[in-house]
Image (cartoon, rainbow, N blue to C red; front, side, top):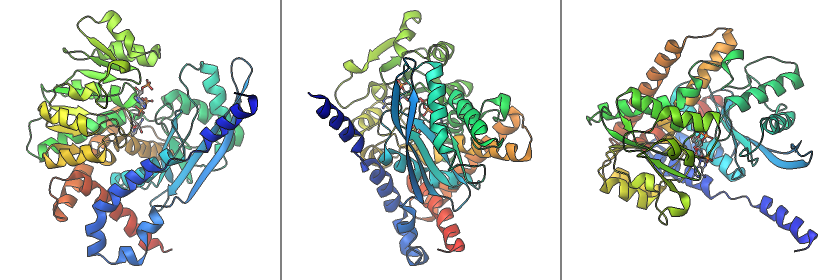
Amino acid sequence: MGIAEKEIKKFEQNRVVDEAIFYQAMEEIVYSIAPLLESDARYQKYAILERLVVPDRVIKFKVAWINDKNEIEVNTGYRVQFNNTLGPYKGGLRFHPSVNEGVLKFLGFEQIFKNALTGLPIGGAKGGSDFNPKGRSEFEIMRFCTAYMQELHKYIGARIDVPAGDIGVGCREIGYLFGAYKKITATYDGVLTGKPFVFGGSLMRPEATGYGVVYFTQAMLEMQKRESLQGKICTVSGAGNVALHTIEKLYQVGAIPVTCSDSGGMIYDPHGVDLALLQEIKNVQRGSLEKYVETRTGAKYISVSEYPIEEHPVWSTPCYAAFPCATQNELNEADAKNLIANGCMCVAEGANMPSTPQAIELFLNQKISFAPAKAANAGGVAVSGLEMSQNASMKRWSFEKVDAKLKEIMHQICKTVSLTALEYGVEGNFVDGANIAGFKRVADAMIAEGV
Ligand code: NDP
C-alpha cells in the first residue's frame, strides 16, 4: 500500500460516524414513554421528543499533542452538550479508541434522564476523545489532557458545563484537566467534578457509582420482597472504577463477588475476589488481570481468546445477582439466558446500557429484578452534584455526610422509579419507570421554559 492509500485509509476510519448505539438508547426511551405521550397531549404539542433527541450542540475538535518520542499525534476531541433545561450540562469524559460522535450522543442522551432522576439541578452532556490511554506514560497522559483542555475550556464553566470522568478518565486525569483549565483561564472554580480531594474533590466521589449501584439494588430487592444480598454469590464484570467499588460495597453488605473482567479476559475466584490484589494490579500497576492468578491460587483466568462465541463467561457463572460494570452491550441475549438458567434473580447495571434490548426483554419477562443503568448508576453523577454544591459554598463535607446523602438519593430514585411504573400500569418494570420519570421531569421543565 502506497503512502497516499495509507493516508486515505486513516481518514476513512475517522470519517465513520456510527449512530446505531444512539438509536438503541433513543428507541428504548420512545417505547417506554409512549403511554405518557398518549395520556398527555402537551408533550406532542410542545414537540418535546423532537427537541430532546437533537443535542443543543456537538463540539468536535482536533487535539494535537507530543508523545514521549517527540512525535506529534492527532486525536479527535468532543463535547456533546445535549440538554441544559434542568441545570448546567453535566456528564463524563471518556478516553477510549472506540469513542465517536454516535457513542457520545448515546451517553449524553442517557445522561439527561439519569441526571433528572437524581432530583438535582443538572442537565445532560458527555464528551471525550478517541485517545487510547493504555500503555501511555504519566507525562503523555498529562500532555494529552493539557492539549484536550486547550480547546475544551472555551465551552465549559461552573455554571455552563461541568464534565467529570468516565472510561479512561479517573481522578488523575481530572486533576491534569483541572490544572490545565486553571492555567489557561486563570480561574479557580468547580468546572470539573471527580477532582482529587487535595484541591476541591468531594470525599466519596470515586466510590459513588459502585456504592450507589449496591444501595439501589438493596432498595429494589427489599421493595420487591426478594432475598437480600447478604451471603449471596454475585458476578461483576469490569475491573475499573465502577466494578471495584461495586465489589467493595458488595463485601460490606455481606455478599460474595466471585468474578471481574477487563478487555483481555476474566477472573473467576470461587472464594470471592481478592479486592486488595485487584486494586494493586489495576490502580497501582495499571496492568492486566492475568497477573491476578500469579499470586492467587484457586482462581481461574480465562482470556478473551478462549471465550465461547457470542457468550461472556462472566454471565455463565452461577450467581444470585449480576452486576455488569464494564461497557455498553456487554451482556447479550445468550448471556441473559445463561444467567436465568443458572438461577440469577437480579441484574443491576453499573455500566451505561450494558444489556442489549433482547437481554432486557428476557429479564423483564422472567420477572428478574432488573435495575437499569439510568437509575442504578446515578450515584456517580449525584455525588458530582454534591461536589458542585461544596465547591460553590466553599465547604467540605465529611465522608459520612456524603455517603448518607448518596444512600438517600439512591433510595429516593428507587422509590420514584417503582411508583412511576405502578402509576403507568407496568408494576415492577424499572426500565419504563426510570424512563418515564426521567423524561417527565425534563419535559415538564421544557414546557415551563418555553421554546
Ligand atoms: P474505567 O475506565 O475505570 O474501567 C472500565 C473497565 O471496563 C475496565 O476494566 C476496562 O478494561 C473494561 N472495558 C472497557 N471497555 C471495554 C470493552 N470494550 N470490552 C471489555 N472491557 C472493557 O471506567 P469506569 O469504571 O468509570 O466505567 C465503566 C462503565 O460505567 C462505563 O459504561 C461508564 O460509562 C459507566 N459509568 C461510570 C461512572 C463513573 O463514575 N466512573 C458513572 C456512571 C456510569 P480495560 O482496562 O482492559 O480496557
